[in-house]
Length: 402
Image 1 (spheres, helix red, strand yellow):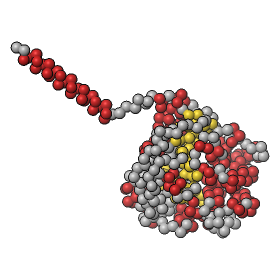
Image 2 (cartoon, helix red, strand yellow):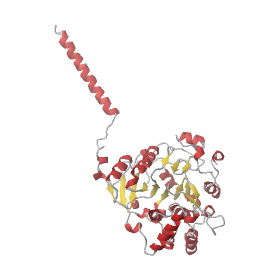
Image 3 (cartoon, rainbow, N blue to C red):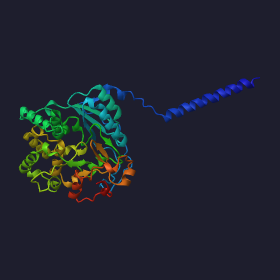
Image 4 (cartoon, rainbow, N blue to C red):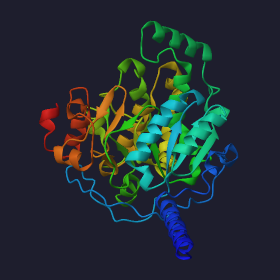
């Protein structure tokens, strides 16, 4: 009679033990961060101040890919470089920048956890901070642009500038009638790297809303830049719309004549000019993607270059873009070998695509871009000129993408 209850007790003990084991295995298989709520709390956002070092500073880098065609050879594994992503955006851009962040994180930053600086001429709202903080694996910082960096300098005739905008609008020149676009181009040309939040870093990677990365990035571009003494890099290049910059080269020529000591001996003048510097051929690196050295932008040669151009008023009396301003500076003030083309970083910003040239490279990097969309070797691109000026061999297969 007593064997029955004993048997049931034994079954109950086995069942309890089994449930305990199942619970422990479930908890270990699905880790739940104890601080998950803190990342979504607006009180935890970093505003206009430097933060303490991230806990990911010494995160190991993944195995890195070697690509001889582009020159981006593998670099030694190690900790992170002192670098950040930087985005100029408005609160209304939140979902477009969310798409960009997701792409950058999935393809690269989930392995490195680099910081991200967001800049705006207005205060960022809580929704923008909440969403971007949740998406970025590194530390996010939010800064307001000083009014003096997003307004007319005292030497600009605002009535003249207004008439220029009206005229360019009537001629249907892209962004020709936009006042805010001009402030943005001037800010990106001469001020973003001087924002207090940016003073904490040595390198930057510019990211704009609604961009996409098509391939895994299996190395650290920041570390590559630092270890190979690169100051500026790009993935797309093209010709500028001349009606937006009719006197830009005149201003550049004046600067060169006033400061010959700043012009690099082994510069890239042949990328910028077909006649030894007499005229500008309009080639420039498309600056909505750029990875660069902040100390170079803060250097005396670059600062005097920008200030000289700024005094001439072309940001407002014409519609000078930050892309030709940055590109001309890199082409004249840097040695050729300090500028780098990242074939491996597949990138899209409407309407152009950079899809890495080389089928095996695309397979290795798990790319999902269509190589026929690659802009690099098409007629309006300046990338072929860049390869020619630098005596570089084009990647195998480029003929099929021209």
